[in-house]
Every structure is written in structure tokens, then in C-alpha cells.
Image 1 (cartoon, rainbow, N blue to C red):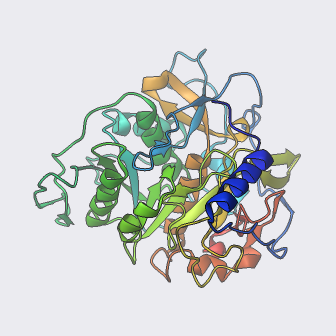
Image 2: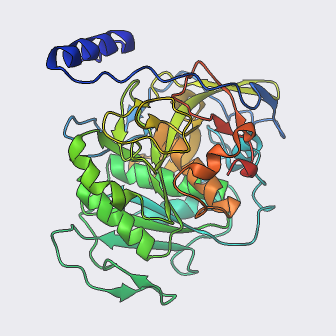
Length: 412
């Protein structure tokens, strides 16, 4: 079914609620201008970093109206002409590009600490470690493998199943058995897991990665995987997925807010859409932008498909500036438009491609937060709102993009 235009859909929704006596959430209030509208890049982007048009973007996971089922939020444009895992050049934003855009230290100049980042996905990706190795090797990043302790895969059994206690190689307790791997998948969720761990690697080259694989895309199973990632030592967790908002999800809010660990969630890839867990009060929600570059001058505009808005279920956190009566989504924003997307490697989809969607913006923010050293400070996004001047304005966003694009680690 073709999606209604945003304004028409909003009007229809309002009329429906009025007829049923439901409360209509007001339009989010505008955020007072903060930061800069444009910025000069530290280094020029590569010649193949932005390749617009041409190959059509393929949605990794089909959307579903079932509020108990989550969809991954990525769209890929694959380079079908490449036959080698190590070509002379690839399309899309590189690790060096990202450090220039977001203002954090470039790979090789980053702090030597090794924060642990959790990446939660559905199903098992048998090629996750080998695909990550190709990506990191191609861009000259240090090896991150299960052998050297940098990469760990944790299988989270469904909550209805019994889970044995075990320990990882470093002796830390793992709440869900690493042997309880879910069914293998070579489809969209596998590509999602590849892009998530690769983007975390691109941003934070020294981060350790825990890939927590849920038994299915059921939101209860994904909540169990958050628990597994926390048990494996993650201090910040990426959730590049979402399910349609529903009141019953309040029962799972605490599972996605495992304080002091932070969960960073994608806001969605459909304009006006509000998804769980991004709508949860103390989850850090990330909207999507389009990158605009002229020479070395950069600006950001709201990606036309970015989700976000006002929650009808979850309360606003006290640190949010009253944009909505309830929770406003999102808190911050990151690059998401597939036309200005990131290079990634997925053997199941044929090799190299360009990945977009708010599922790309979320792991960038996740890794920056981890690298900042303040991942467990405050509640939810509270520390972010203390530093509004460290965020770049996002044109045309209203408050869908929240504070905007972080321009340095000081934003956290």
C-alpha cells in the first residue's frame, strides 16, 4: 500500500482520534538555534565518498504493522560490478570521512582505551566476523576478532527458554548462553548486523564489539539480547531496529533502559513514524539527515524519510525542552540518506555497497558516545542536552532531529 503524504496522513490521524475522543499530540515546538548551520570539514571527502543516483536502494527488512515484531532500518545500494573483496576503490563514506564530518579523532589518533559496545540484532549472521575482518583490513583498521578478544558473539535465547549462566574468555558473567545461537539468516538482518559492527568500527577503531543476536525479530527476544549484551560488558548498546509504537510496550521499557548502560536506537525510515524502542523515555533516539557538501563546506538537512515525532505512549524526560507533551523523538541526528551513505561490506549481498537509513546514524552516535568516555553518565540522553552548542543545526528538521548533528566528542 502506498504511504500517504505526510501532511495528509497527519490530518487523517487527527480526524480519527478526534472521532474516538483520543488526545491529539501537538506539533513539536521549534528548537532555538544552536551551533552552526554550516561547518568547514577538517579534511576533504574522498572522490567516491558521495555517489548519488544510479543504483536503487534496497530496503533490508520489510516493514510490518505488528507492534510485537521489529524491522531493521537499513537501505543498501550494492556495487554489483565488483568481484574482489579488495578493489582499488569503493563508493560511500569512509572511516576517514566520518571523522572529518563528526569532528572526532581520526583512526590511529584515538584514545587507547577499549570501551565495549553492544550491537543487538535478530538472528545469527554466520559471516559477521569474517565480513568485519574484510572491512577493517580494507580501511587499515586493527584486527578485531574473537581470537584477540576484540569481537564477541553472544546468542540470546528466547525469554521463554531456560538460559544457562556462563563466562566469556575474560571471566565476565554472561547472562545468556553463548551456545544458544538463533537460527541463521543470510538476508536483511545479516546485512544489518554487518553494517552495524562495521560502522562502530569505522568510528571507534579501538572499541570492543559484542554482537548480541536475538532468537527472532520479536521485540521480547530483542529485549533479551539487550540483556545479553549488558551481561557481556557493553556500556553502550546499539539498536538499529524498531516496532510500531503501542501501549503494551511500556512493559518492556525498563529492558531497553538498563541503567547505567545506554541504549541508542534508530528513529525509523518512514516520515512521521514513531517506533519503539526509540520512543522510550530514556533511550537515545537518532534521526536521519542528508549530507550536503560544497568543496570543504558541510551542512546537514533532514532526510526526507527520517522517522520521529511525538510519542503517544511514553513520558517526556525532564531534560527534554518540552517539544512535545510526551516524549519527543529524536534526541540527535546522524547521516542516513542512502544517497550520501556509508561504504560497507556484506558477503551475503555480494560484497561492497553503500548503506543508509537511521540504522546507520544510530551506530555512529553509539560509537561516539562510547569513545567519549561518558557513556554511563546521567540518565538516557541527559548529558547530551547539557551541550547544545556542540550540535550542528539540521535544516528543515523542526525538532525531529532534536539537538542536531554532534560536531565533536564534547557533544557527549
